Image (cartoon, rainbow, N blue to C red; front, side, top):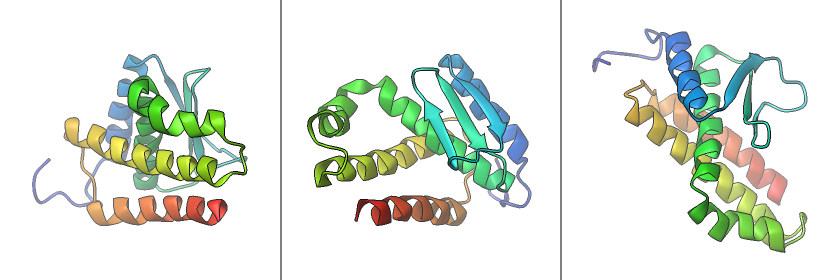
Length: 145
C-alpha cells in the first residue's frame, strides 16, 4: 500500500478476505457473525475462528489478526508449550501463574497477528491497532487481578 494510505481509504473487506485465505491455507475456517458469548475466538479442536460483526470492519480486521496470532502460537507449539501451556497444565485456573499465562498468550497473539499483517503487506493503522490491542489486553489484566 502507498504511504498515503489511511484507515479511511483502506478496503477492510479485501484485507479481511486475504486473512481468511491465510487461515484456510492452515485448514482453519473463519466465520463473520454475531458472537454473543464473547467478542471473537478461535476453537483449535474444530479449527474454526469466529469474528464478531458488531464492530467496525477495521476492528474486525484487527481481531481476526489477533485470532490468527493464537493460531500461529498453537501451530508453533515448541515455544508455546514451554511457557504458556506449561502454566495452563500445571497450575489451577485461579492461580496467578495460570492467569499470567493467559495474559502472556493474549499479548503474544497480538504480536503474531501484527507480524502476519506485515508479512502480507496489509495496512495497519498503528494508532488504532495499538488502541484496540491495549483495550483487549487491559481487560485481561482486570480479569487476572
